[in-house]
Image 1 (cartoon, rainbow over the protein chains, first blue to last red):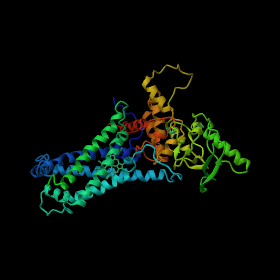
Image 2 (image 1 turned 135 degrees about the vertical axis):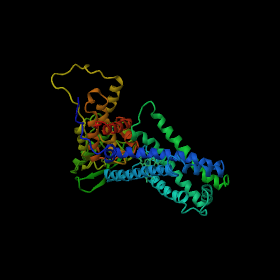
Image 3 (image 1 turned 30 degrees about the horizontal axis):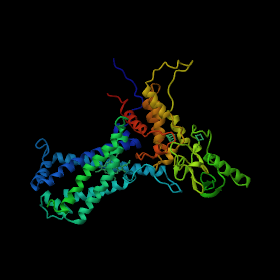
Amino acid sequence: MATTSAPARPARSGFLLDLYRSALGKKYLMAVSGIVGLGYVFAHMLGNLKLYQSAEDFNAYAAFLRRLLYPILPESGTLNLLRLVLIAALVVHVVSAYQLTVMNRRARPERYKGPRDYVVADFAARTMRWTGVIVLLFIGYHLADLTLGWVNPAPSGSTPYEKVIASFSSLPIAAFYLVANTALGLHLYHGVWSLFQSMGWNNRRFNHLRRSFATGFTLVVVGGNLSFPIAVQLGIIS
Amino acid sequence: MNLTLRVWRQAGPTAPGRFETYEAKGVSEDSSFLEMLDTVNEGLIGAGHEPIEFMHDCREGICGTCALMINGQAHGPAERTTTCQLHMRTFSDGDEIIVEPWRAAGFPIVKDLVVDRSAFDRIIESGGYVSVATGSAQDANLIPIAKDSADIAMDAAACIGCGACVAACPNGAGQLFTAAKLMHLNSLPQGQPERYERTVAMVEVMEEHFGSCTNYGECEAACPKGISVDFIAAMNRDYRKALSRNRRSA
Ligand code: HEM
Ligand code: SF4
Ligand code: FES
């Protein structure tokens, strides 16, 4: 027997679009795209640890990324797919952040006239919009430096390892990497905690672990990232 | 004790406002903040001035009417305390105290320290009810309720709708209030039939009036009833479920 039960609400335009329409949903999409980003920064940091092994290992790793799932997909195919996913996630993340920020400015048009300070919100939470922008600028520079090679000091045709060393040997560039990754660290310190709330991953038995997880994750990723320019500057890798 | 008050005075919703300075002399440490303002107002009335308008009703911390930003903190410096339950012994002789209304687009100023919080009523109207069979009263224990659920619902129901959460939030977000009202009903068996419609309806109305949550936690710190941000996470979860269910699979 065919039963047609009317849906409680008329089906609208698909789960993701419905989500995107509301602020709560945008926050959810920010969290999901943030998680994609977290997976990326974690894997990226782990892969780059090969810098400490040898130039050959590092270059082989870079070549291996281009041949992921080869020959099922053409050379660089998987890598480009992953890049597309990351770019899509970044666009969703940044556009939502922008739209929610506009919404929040409108919701609090007048500031308090008397002095007022935050009670519990920490520095990382209050600077999410700034650290986000710094990370965005950094991503642009980083791609132009090491992926596309446009602004890399090494001659064209250099191996990935040579490009990294050339870049990090310059003190201003190394300093910029340190600043940007510190900003990333602040962003993750709040973001990794915040995403549990946005995703609705809430369980009184595990809630106390969310803060520790955010701190631990941030320390591992940012600690690793910061170590690379420092190691090159100190001559530990060259 | 003697205090200097800097109080926000504003003649009407669109009138420009400013701080006025008042000296409060001989204030008893045992008086409440509102009693202190009453005394100041008696002085103002005696001198032929307009008294300071502020909101109050029960004065025993249960109705949620009183609402003042005191020295930059919603309901003042004492934890888990409404303005009416804030005692002057929290301050010291000679203090300067700055008093402002809640400030948020969703809470327009009516006069002086009085704001219009009917946006909260709009949220409640949109989903703060359960379907019941009318007729003679049911037996009280007809619907068994797990102790856990009852406890959670009670914690959420403690919200008195004062708006300190919105006032304290840098984003002017109404998440803590809405989540409390929502999870009060969503945690109980009686609230299940409308659970997901309620969630969508209340969230939509909330977003018409208030900002978006960035998980600062300022609301929880300001809340006189200690409503937990755990409820916000639960609301987010129910909202996501609400959008993904009830779709035709064919
Ligand atoms: C490597 C890149 C990035 C990662 C891994 C990342 C990760 C995250 C995570 C996990 C969250 C928490 C999400 C939530 O609770 O819903 C978040 C929030 C946020 N992100 Fe990012 N993000 C990145 C880049 C950016 C960029 C480029 C911007 C903006 C230009 C940005 C702006 C924001 C803002 C404004 C928030 C909201 C903060 C809040 O609600 O408290 N992020 N990010
Ligand atoms: S959640 Fe707390 S601060 Fe917000 S309205 Fe309810 S009682 Fe007031
Ligand atoms: S006047 Fe009722 S809670 Fe303060």
